[in-house]
Image (cartoon, rainbow, N blue to C red):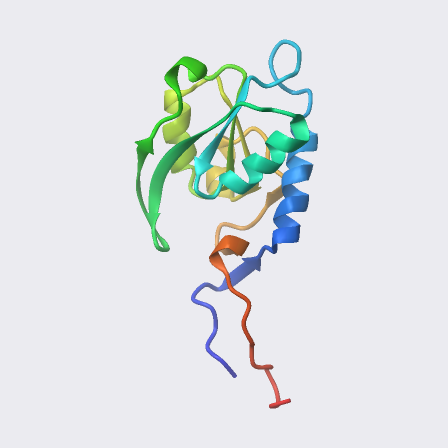
Length: 167
C-alpha cells in the first residue's frame, strides 16, 4: 500500500467539476444583484477565485473583472491574511453591486479582511467550510472543516498503485 495523503479527508476537484460548480454558482447569482438584479463588476480573490470568476463573468455577461490579491496560506499552513494588490478603488467604492468570488471559504479570514474593505459587496464561493460559512452569502457545496480540497490547478495526473495486488 502507498503512503496516505497528508490529510485525513481529501476532496479532489477536476477541471470539469470546477466548471460545472462555477456555472451553478452563476445560475444561483443570476438576478440577485442590487436594484435591477445585475452586478456592476466581479472581483476575483487571487489566485483560487480566478477560474470561478472567469466562468461566472462569462455566464452572467459581466465585462468588468478585477482582482484582489490576498495571501493567507503559505503552502498548506494558514496565517494572517494580508492584501497584496487591491482592486480599482473608483470601481469598488463601498462594494455595492460588486460580486466578490473565491474558490473556497475555509476559516473565513480572507473574506473577513476583504469584507472589512468592501462591506456592501456580495461574497460568493464555490465551496464552503463551516468555520467560514458566515462570511459568504452564496456558495454551492459545503464540505467538513477537516476536508482538504485538491483543486485541479494544484494537481498533476500520475499513476497510482492499487490498494491490493500489483496489476
